[in-house]
Length: 282
Image 1: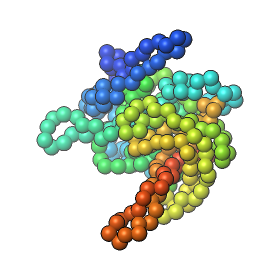
Image 2 (image 1 turned 30 degrees about the horizontal axis):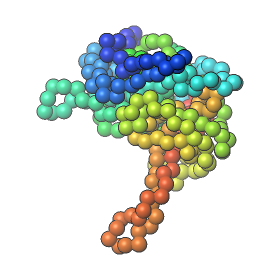
Image 3 (image 1 turned 180 degrees about the vertical axis):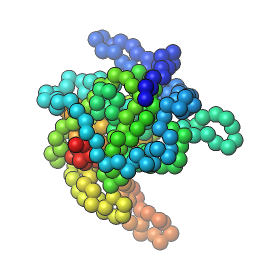
């Protein structure tokens, strides 16, 4: 199916100014938030997006065969500017029973795997409440419809999907990163679009509890929050070594019976290791 990309070039979310030899891009989060329901809703109305029934069925797919770009072997001078165009916002829309307008269900993060429009985010981004359709927004303010789920894993929290036709800048898949190695994240925490953070790999461990029990998790020290789900975790060469998944807050046990929890202590930041993404690829 041929799918055109919806452009909002008249309302780009970036404005820039120059300091010396450096161009500083200023992101207008509020403008993006206003454009998301309008543009993704338009894609739904044109029947360009995958419908809910199709999405639910396609989330059962567990393998896809793809041709991937080669690993980047040398450090990038500016990892943010080299990789930000490979990061997308993944958004969905719905209509309520009180008006005729499209509403956004919020925005998560995704990243480009192939130049022809195969992208990756978390399984849980697609597996929430029923919506009318999904779309993605690139850093230049263009929107494209999510048209197909190619492979997914609830246990690993990975979904590989395709968007409408276009030319995209992929992120190469690297090896699993060693504990203590540097890493970099670009994501959209709480609709603060294209936020960069950095840190290190703190450990790998097996997940406990129901649902995803036994899945290998990569814990990191780089900060992220809701909306960062699906964000790329990269090494200093710009290779993908993991993907943002979830956080867990640790509280000291309360000494008072009336308190549900004691003082806050730290946040555990959980990511999907790149090896779990590779398991979905033939």
